[in-house]
Image (cartoon, rainbow, N blue to C red; front, top):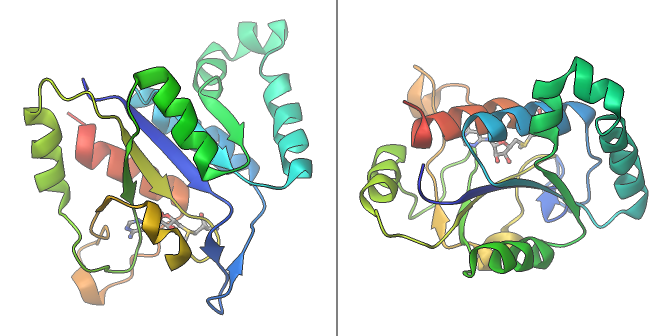
Length: 192
Ligand SMILES: C[S@@+](CC[C@H](N)C(=O)[O-])C[C@H]1O[C@@H](n2cnc3c(N)ncnc32)[C@H](O)[C@@H]1O
């Protein structure tokens, strides 16, 4: 993959079952499983976005475990994946970090299980990214927690990916865990 790719998991600007905007808690599985997908598909970084400082402390404690010599010796693969994780308080911090690393702000790509107007297919975006050999603009794939990303986040968005559907198509069940959604979407865009 020549285009620099990043992943953000939002715990803010997401909704609850009633459609109200809420802040969600970070889950342990999301840290590890998404980090492993990120590493497999050569993502440059995986941002966990939450304004809650207690959550930062908790996650840093978990990440600290993976920095010990024992973990490095026993689980080198997991340590390598988890090293991609970065805790930030706001989405602005995500953009600033990518700008500092890549010299360009990212193209922000929204994912959602629901259809949103003006979305693009995986095939089209995959083709666009693979054909743009000199492209420098990083891609930032954004995923939600709770009941998905709130429309209050939409002003940040440049591109929207169509929902992933199973064999049931648009009428079928497609409420994936965020961990599965990340893996499927990375594979559709960058898998071989
Ligand atoms: C709504 S949250 C659900 C979080 C939940 N706590 C879980 O089980 O992981 C799941 C996120 O994964 C992505 N997602 C889930 N299903 C999807 C689909 N069918 N197509 C595209 N993205 C999907 C979206 O980013 C969505 O915001």
